Image (cartoon, rainbow, N blue to C red):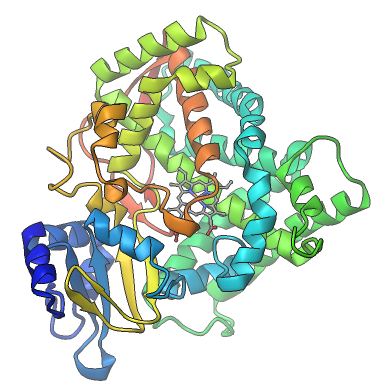
Length: 465
Ligand code: HEM
């Protein structure tokens, strides 16, 4: 398959990429709606490294989008300076509508200004200072799981991890004020993010201004979410809190170029983005890490051995401990290969491009599929197998940079990568220090919302060690 595109590149030809025809009326729309991940993966295997999907009937009613799968092509899209790949597709415009113009959703000079102000908040030193908090939040989960283990109650990994990661990112943001925000976030965010993805994929939805029950509910929820964040900002402006939570740092941040700070709405936009981007994604990664450990007792037992050796029974891991948890980190990376929370990274190609010899016309959507590229048979042997050994330092080095990109790449790469990798290691280590997890064999049903999530509960039985 890779050969096809290389041959084309050598001949210098520009051609239309191959792809599935789908149904005459809807193109691939229904296949993508019913099984987005499977449809994209199969298309990569069948048609090659650049695939053209059509949605809708022919002529001017037909939309087209291009899936790119080869690591070199992913790099081209995520780092090109000339082709003008911007976040202007349906998914990002819905996100912008929901969350405002924060670091994830903004573009151009506005993004550059925000990045200058926010980058210093995410230095490794600062992020590492959250390790004790991450451990304290996890110890509460350990306490709760002890009860489940003693009573033989099945744990829902999905619910437990969503609860834990929301507490962690909420506490990182709001410090001691987190309690007032968590219930509102838990109630509103799942509905709002599901709605955003539905609207992005099926633009034939009713206008938002129509007073349908769903529109009214969305408005109410959005307002409730804004209110809780706005109240926290107002309280903090009136009386700055002790400590260095992210909200305090955002309120103090200044643009090194002109000394100006962020206004209240800009702070709210960033807070909402951190909440949304930092909570579900890490929850999914942890849920699948534990689920796969539960299915693979031998790998779990290696991990138990490492955790016991590094922590020596201590329940307050330090940054050095986390750094020494090498196998644990390999396990998490492998879980994120198979179940990348950001399963597709969409872009809009402003200027037009040629990828692998194929023409990408200006004004078309392009998406980089972590889901498919992480299973690309040219770079991953036996791709469906859960095998943390793929992430030994030597084997990582031997692979092209963009064969694995759960946090994206280029200038718009995830700013929370270090935060979430530290969090995932702390949570996995402390849970494994205390428990043995068993999960049923077989796949988990997936839901492709804004991020990848399990559809419904992910049951596990837990035993004290
Ligand atoms: C496992 C957890 C996470 C995953 C898989 C993940 C994934 C990603 C990906 C793929 C992107 C690039 C999107 C694109 O290029 O279109 C991104 C960007 C971003 N992420 Fe994360 N993320 C995670 C955790 C976090 C956390 C914990 C935070 C914040 C506390 C965060 C905040 C952001 C922000 C602000 C951006 C936009 C950066 C920019 O454009 O400059 N993420 N994330």
